[in-house]
Amino acid sequence: MKVMDHRIVNEPLKFFKSAARMELKGRWLEAAVASGIYVIIVGIVGFIVESLFPTLSFITGIYTLIIFGPAVVGLYAYFMRIVRRQPTNVRDCFEGFEDFGRSLSLGVQMMVRVMLWTLLFIIPGIIAAYRYSQAPLLLRDHPDWTPGQCISESKRLMVGNKGTLFTLEISFIGWYILACLPAIVFAAAYGAAAGVTDMTSLGFPLTLVMLIFEIPILFVYAYMKAADVVFYEELNRPVQVYTVNNMGGSAYNDSGSYGAYDPNGFSGDFSGDDLFDDM
Image (cartoon, rainbow, N blue to C red; front, side):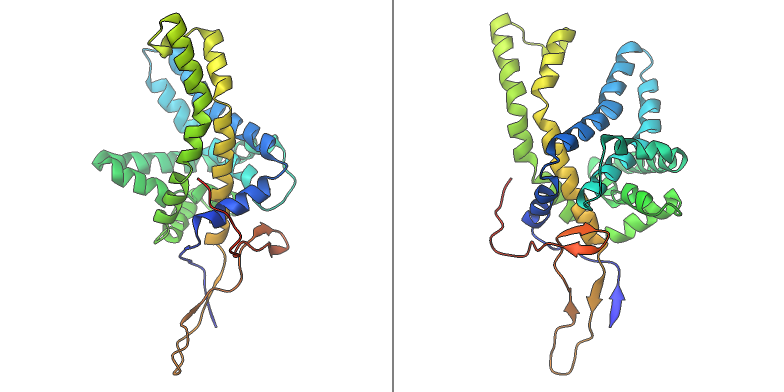
């Protein structure tokens, strides 16, 4: 028997979503808070920096370039603990800052590579983003690897798998639309009552209210990130390959069904027909 460590992930989307929901059970609120921390660090702080220095927009770019790597490594570190059924705390979101040098280097390399591909056209940029998407998880799993090694390994693992991850993440669009409805309804109602058409000019109190109405989005984001980690675990699961025998036997056998990962091995079974589809 030959063991090959590069899998083509072909499980149905409900497989990843069902596993994600199971691992998030009882942890939804904490996972949403963890997602909120990431959004604040990467998005909201960057927005504030840009607001403070409107004529120096490059400062926001520099801030994002510096903060992206540690923030995304920390975010995935948290959700890897969720999926692997390990104790979690929102402080795990800052794990990337504990390995700041490698995380910073990884983030810079990923962003620069994606930006260079995007210069050609938006589609090559999207493909590049998915090509390097597993690098932050690999960095967390392999403390002895360089960022370059993590990027190279992500490129190798994602050969034949980019479309699956893209489809998985796109499948959450329905949930995102539902999560945005409270904010959309509030904006429409306020705009009609106050005669305001430009919602970007709201003052701080109303902006804060808008952010509160957008909290459901964090739950959807947590759901998607957990599913992404399930994809990563499945991507890294060993595959058994058998040679074709003279009787016409199968040349390929993928043993075991993935449930959730824990330090003692895989557990659970998501291969039954009773799993339900969702958005």
